[in-house]
Image 1 (cartoon, rainbow, N blue to C red):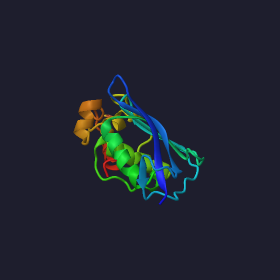
Image 2: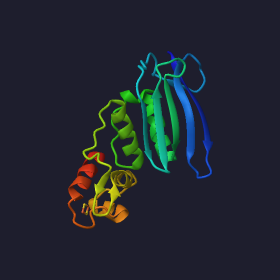
Image 3: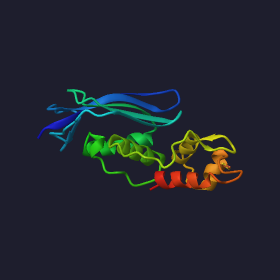
Image 4: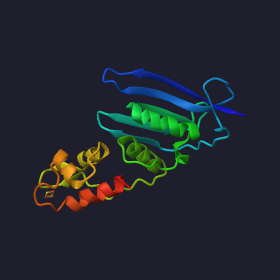
Amino acid sequence: MKSVETQKTASKSLSGENSITGSISNTTSSTNTISGSSAKVFPVGPIIHVSIPFRDHIQVEFTGKTPDPVHWTIKACSSCLNLLNLLQQKNPDPRTWALPVGNSHSHLLIRELILKSHGDWQPPYTADEICHCRGVPTEKVICAIKSGAHTTNEVSRVTQASTSCGTCRSDVQNLLDYFLK
Ligand code: FES
């Protein structure tokens, strides 16, 4: 049986985050092997990145080249790394992964990664600013949701969105519904 060799370099940053750059490639090496992942197809694709600013950053590039068909750049917590490792063991190409079930920040990031890799990432609100009364950027609300604010009240507490006229509350709710499916 062919095997997949995982080539990674890892280091701990001062902030305690784990940084990894590397690739997963088809080889016949007997070291660091993950069985059952042979004969994978790695078509070229876009560079996908997902993040929670100043916290987790995951980037995957589908180069389609040998020996580096799927190249990862990861600076993330152990929770994200554990989930990634679990999924990578089933198949190194994230375009084959099922959407993970769960609403932790690592689940939300991986889900976003998978949907983006399929071109299916379509948040229901895309304007730069979501709350005009408080001048709250949409990205700030999204970051709050990814970081654990899972109700409109929690988002309001963290970001100040929806704390005046309230007309943006439905847009915040739509984002919550999209991210927390
Ligand atoms: S637009 Fe957000 S509270 Fe008014």
